[in-house]
Image (tube, rainbow, N blue to C red; front, side):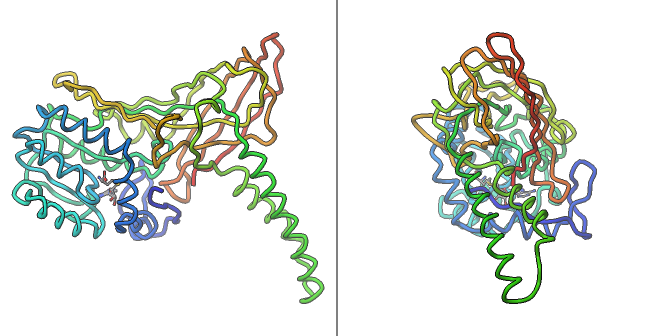
Length: 379
Ligand SMILES: C[S@@+](CC[C@H](N)C(=O)[O-])C[C@H]1O[C@@H](n2cnc3c(N)ncnc32)[C@H](O)[C@@H]1O
């Protein structure tokens, strides 16, 4: 699991959320704190797809590192900074907001790189470097790419510290969405109904034993439970056979030029057609990929891709985010889906996301099914 991010904004402001002030202390308590545990770092370090991609990106493109200056944004355990040093960097600045920096410093020393890698404890937004760098490397991706909003920090680092000729690692990112089938919808519906049955028993007992009628709270309780069970996207490791139609790209990011404004509100219309025989459309699966291509002037010798798409052979700790429909919709091969997708940050916590999906389906005989619109929360 990535770090949790479930705080609310308060009054001590610091980092910015595309213009909106963010409470630094609350952000630290709710977001950064999890990254201070080796347990969480180990989870990321054990993700072979992630590790292989970054390892190959660095060691198959040593020309970007030999004799160069590198900034690792959010170094965590220090792994990416250490690889940059091993690949021949002259100097690596490894910046980490949490006390994990102390473990990173130890690790750097234990791997004999203390003369090359300098670990700096602090937020990238607050620290000062003595020089501009040739490469910025960072593993900033959250669920469905943008949860956690850590890319804001990478943009800040790039605009302050990357040389005009510098290279971003990774250089590009994409978000994908595809229609899926899944048994999770029925399971979650059952969980919601169970929670409401339990509430009815609770109402009876509270009235009988304690003399208070709480039924006025039934509606807000039901809304709360609905949001939790039916509207919150789920982490899932989808099998490719669960994907019912052509995946669509909902966002492409050039990490060398993107601004925070470009990623604050993602809005797009995409289409997909059902490729499976008679089945049920149970929802949509979202995932991302990133690429290491270097820059136009200084391209990678070997381009590397890190994908979190559904796969038979491997899975990542990011998995996919699943947005479930209640009820599911019968569909068949050739049905044509038009989707309006939008994703915004939660007003209460800029590291969480809200997704709105509107869908129209034209079936293969040309008949339009009733359109639907759903809100989801990526918590
Ligand atoms: C996803 S982890 C990646 C850790 C390590 N680079 C790796 O690849 O294993 C992101 C790290 O960035 C740190 N981080 C996030 N935002 C930061 C910021 N604004 N300044 C400094 N560190 C930050 C977190 O504390 C966390 O350790």
